[in-house]
Each structure stands twice: as structure tokens, then as C-alpha cells.
Amino acid sequence: MSKVWSNRFETGLDPFIERFNSSINFDKKLIVEDIDCSIAHATMLGSTNVLTKKESDQIVDGLKQIKNEFKEGKFAPAFPSEDIHYCIEEKLINLIGEVGKKLHTGRSRNDQVATDLRLWLRKRIDNIDSLILNLQKSIYFIATQNLYTLIPGYTHLQRAQPLSLAHHLLAYLEMFDRDRNRLSEVRDRVNISPLGAAALAGTKIKIDRYMTAKELGFKDIYKNSLDAVSDRDFAVEFISASALIMSHLSRLSEEIILWVTDEFSFAKLTDKCATGSSLMPQKKNPDVPELIRGKTGRVYGNLHSLLTTIKALPLAYNKDFQEDKEPIFDTVQTISDCLKAMDILLNDGLEFQKDNLMNSVNNDFSNATDVADYLVAKDVPFREAYQIVGGLVKFCLTKELLLKDLTLDTFKKFHNEFEKDIFEKISPRNVVHSRNSIGGTGFDQVKYQLSIWQKKLLN
Ligand code: ARG
Image 1 (tube, helix red, strand yellow):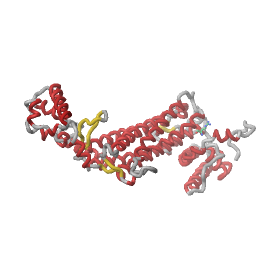
Image 2 (image 1 turned 120 degrees about the vertical axis):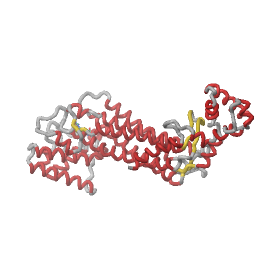
Image 3 (image 1 turned 180 degrees about the vertical axis):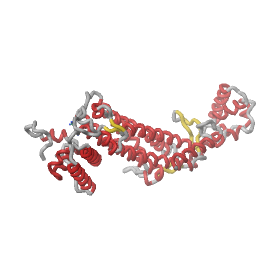
Image 4 (image 1 turned 90 degrees about the vertical axis):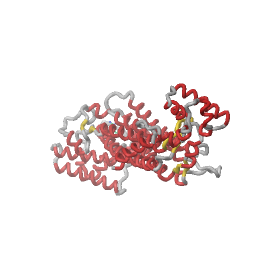
């Protein structure tokens, strides 16, 4: 097929360079958006009388037919078309003849590709948002079932203080909520129309940029034609928001990987989300969270890749921009897959071992702070109480005992204010229950948070 380029060229491209130059193998993903963009442009050219009504209708009908053929699997964009934009234009000209050559009036591939990409990304952001919402609902339901399940809380990955498992899970709901807010802010900046900026300087053709923007559902138009064709901030912002989503998924994955080890045994994997070893028959591996953790690197890489691509580009369009697509496409694919996989893992792939969790919080020193707080309530200054309990823990360690195993007499040897209610006060359930400061793990606080999430997620 001959190239659309002007007669300025005498020979064709070197065959290797022709492939090197082309982007059709990946930008064919933009086909629907490219056609929609062209339909809006051609309709507008008809209504501003740049084209006759008949010409505009013929072009729009041809484009709709191409879209249908594509949807029915009868048309597949492919090399040797250089990119999706040329591919559709060539196909249109083949289909409706000479009038097809008028589609590109007052438009450049530069504003076209920028428009297509925004349309494509806008749709994917909406889909990713609903995937995060689904995941949040799953986490919420697991949390509601585990208000009174206790889990050791850690700092430095050392036992710190016991928690309600629901409280632990709700921390992830907060993270994913920030992710959704960020995505919606990014969406606002994706949702601006560059169409009509033409190659870089605008056009003398009578176009109506507001009309195409409205037709395509954009909320505003770019005010500067150079900025319109050379801005990829929206894509960087999208990948950056995605990188944070991946970091949240990855941290949750890491916890699950720890929880299902023999050493922790806080949860176990069902057969739906675990794999075996080819050699060691006893193994059950957490491939799903490991893959999510691993794929986080891809998305971080995509962010670096795009930032580096744009960093020294003079205004306005440069072919370097063709390299923006694969990091964006890969990010959308990776993040959508990981959100789905995590949702399946949480719903069907993971079972908390409640007895083991209970056992863990009953058999450690994570109630030590509460022994100190007990003395604080009897007017012992905190720092003094802290030292006393340090001594108690040391004593226990030498005797291989836990704080709850000590006799009241022993407690009293360390401080006279200890009474027999100390044993009740340091039971894990009371320890958790008593942390009732706003945002704390106390059951009343967590119940309140659950009620807020219920309204937010289920209405
Ligand atoms: N395939 C190109 C891209 O993805 C389309 C825009 C080409 N524009 C140009 N002036 N060569 O960026």
C-alpha cells in the first residue's frame, strides 16, 4: 500500500526502517477511540460547512462501517500501515473513495494521537476505579467478619501490640481510597481536549473545538496549541497514581506471603490460588501475591520510562512521543490484572487461621505496654512504669514465663500498686478493646469505622 505522505518523497522507506518507524503493532489498541475522534472531527467539519453535509455524512458512515467491521472481527489493523491513524484513513479512502481524503482537513496526527490516548485512558481509568471499588468491598466484608479476631501488630516486624484484624484490614481500605481519589483527580486532567491544535499552531480552517470536545465528552479544551500536542503530564500522573496502587497491592501481598508461612501460620492458601513445586511435594506456594509484588516493578519501570522519554523534548511534537504508549498500555494491563487477582485471592484464595492468630496474641509480650499503662492509671509516671515493666519482662525471660503467668506476689515485688485486676487488664481482648482513642484499634472505634465504610461502599 502506498504511503499517505506527500510527493516530496521519491523513494520508499528502507524495509527495516519502515518497521522500526511503525507503531501499528501496539497503537492498534486505540482503534475505537481513533474512529470516534474522527467521527467527531468529520461531524464538526460538516456543521461548520468546511465539508458539505453530504461529504461529512459519507465520511461518518464510512467510519462507522469500519468500526462495525472491527467489532465483528472482519477487520484487523496491521503492518504495513504505519500507525492506527494512517491505517483508518487508508481504509476509509479504500471504502468510500476520494471524499475520504477530506477527513484530515484541519487536523494533524499530533492532535489526533493526543486525543485518542486521552479517550482511551479515560475509559480505562473508569474501569480501574471500579476494580478498586470491588476490591475495597471484598476487604470490607472480610473485615466485618473479623472485628473480634485478633492479630499481632508489628513494628520493625517485631511483635508490638495486638490488633483487631478488621482494623488491620481497614488500613488497606484507606490506602485504596486515596488511590481512588488520586485517580479521579488524574481523570480530570486527562479529560481535556487537544483536538484542533492541529500540528502545533492551530489551523486556518474553520473548526469548532468546543463542538468536538463536547461530542467526545471532554470537560474543557487545551488553551494553547503547543501545550495541547506536547503535554504528556496526564500520562505521567496516571502511571504515578498506578505506581502507588501497586505499592499498596504489593505491601498487602508481602503480608499475605508472610502470613501463610509455617513460621507465621496466620492464614492458609486454598487450592484456588496456590501452586505446587515441581520437586518438593510438600510445597504450596503463594504465587499470586508474589506475582503482584513482582509486577510492581514493571509499573515503577513504566513511570521511569515515560519520565525519561519526555524529559528533554523541545516543543512541540517529537516522534519520541510514540514511545509513550507501551508504558501506558502495560500499566493499565498490569494494574487491572493485579487488582482482579488480589480480589480473587482475598475472596477465594485465603483463609485466616483464627485459632493460630488467637494463640499468637496469647503467647507474647505484646501486652507489656498495658502493664505500664496500668501503673500510669495509678499515678506512676510513664517513664518509671516503663522501666518497671522492662524489669518484669527481663524477669519473665529468665524464667521462661509470660507476663500473664506471673503471680500477683511477683507483680507486687516490682510495684506495690499491682492488684489482681492486672490479669484481666492484660488479656489480649481487653488490651485491644481499651485502645479507644479516635482511629485506634479499640472495638468501638473499629465498629464505627466499619459503619462509615458500609455507607461509603455499599450505597
Ligand atoms: N504514531 C505517532 C505517535 O504515536 C502518531 C503521530 C505522528 N506524528 C508525526 N508528526 N509523525 O506518536
